[in-house]
Image (cartoon, rainbow, N blue to C red; front, top):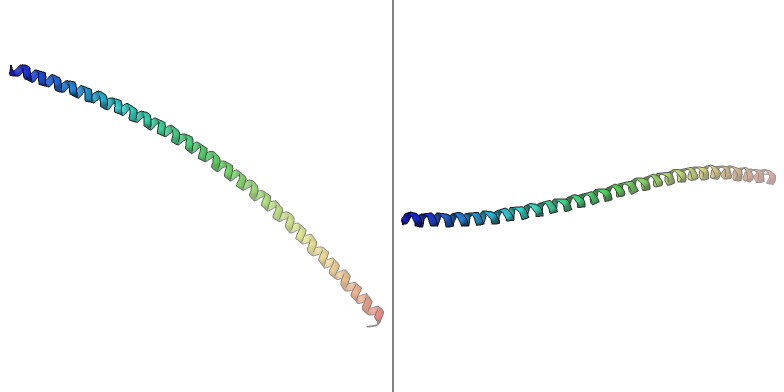
Length: 105
């Protein structure tokens, strides 16, 4: 009879073991599903971040180009103003000299 009890004990242990293995297998499947879902969310988030970074860089480059063009135009305007001021100063100097000569100074 000891052999029968031992056999029953072993069968019960095997049954418990099988049950625990089934639960562990289910837990592993759920963990793998959560991991896959997490990876998918991560990939989606990273794609959105990369797209936003590309957009920000593109806007930055465009703004930099516009700013450079504005500085170039402004430099040309300042250069034109300097030339006009020099002409005006020369004309004014000539006018002053002509007045001095008329007054006999």
